[in-house]
Length: 283
Length: 262
Image (tube, rainbow over all chains, first blue to last red; front, top):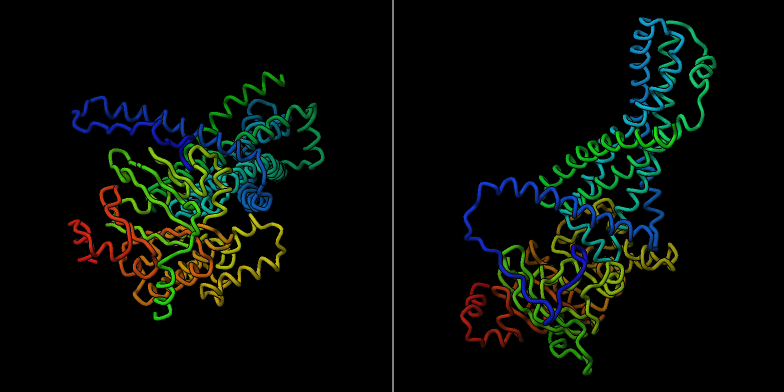
């Protein structure tokens, strides 16, 4: 049952009529194809999500594979995430100091850096970097398995590939994204403070005090945990693109590219929606 | 080869003791777009019997196996395994049936991130969790010894030849002691000596385990060696089914041409 829900049987299902190939092609065909392709993609994604959800809630659970994926998504992304966070911290520090000095608001620097990193840049940069690294890797790995029939071999061995491959990866992304975001934030704040201290000495304690003055958990936690939604998007798109690949090496390349592009696009769109939602729920 | 012929002669009359066929395919049809691949296939396989499905490239032989194991969905017709229809089964329900089946892919489809031993252990790790680590390891060694690969446990699939990969694939297919064995072009791409070795191996395993087997091949010599019955496909239909002698005695032009060219 790898593709369809129901098998036709016996006398109850007539043969599928042959498609007519003698009809003249119309000018609307490319547009029709595009529109059909668009809806087919979303339809297939919906079916995929349903199969993954069903597999996720029925045992046996693939704990060992989940732990392996947590390491793959989390630990192995950490160096890149930390580096990206460090770069963001320095950039925001330089830009913010210049702007705030112009408007006579230098004292606002710690809060500006903290809020910029934790509420805005940290989550989105983490999402986009993980989308690139993990999305491409997962998409390519699963695509390669698909074209070499390894996924079919898993299914032929009476193991649910949606449970073993997709559920574990998606869950790993959901769990690891908030933690990686914290790493980005910490790295960004550290290097941002360091960049500021080089110009105008400020103890780290003072910096944290000033930066988090008046802040509550609701100022930062929703923004951090919204990245779990990014993880859901990245894992789902990468697994979906990988497991439906056709076409050999070219197909693998296409799956990897599409995983990154589509996941990144959906992460950005989700951020727009989630920012608004957070502002409404946590005013 | 003499030993293989002895076994083949003994297998010409498989003993199924009047039991119902293990695999029954009725009026099976499958098309990909407008291209009809199977157009009303009927066949059955009993316990202890090997059916070779022959035909030209692109006649749907591999598709037939994929339909039987449930990797494809037919457009029409029915497939019954031990009397149970596989129509409409969810993936986990189909999994229960697949535990009784072993499938050897045409290109072995080994997991390239696992060693040879890891590949064979994979189904055991998921379905024989009651086995201890050492019991599983012993079973893996035993399976690899049966296929002549006991000295390659820690090698990766990319480090071994195509013939060796097929042997490992066969060991993996036998890991859960299946009652049904499906083999997709087991000797494709192999030299004559390696092909003969794979044929001998299949014969030996069949003689020992009495599985219901379907072997898809375009190699007539291999089919003659390992199969009790042969079915020749053309344009989505079974043109003839029977022993090799039946094929030789056929007046159908396509059959004569196929035998002549093989």
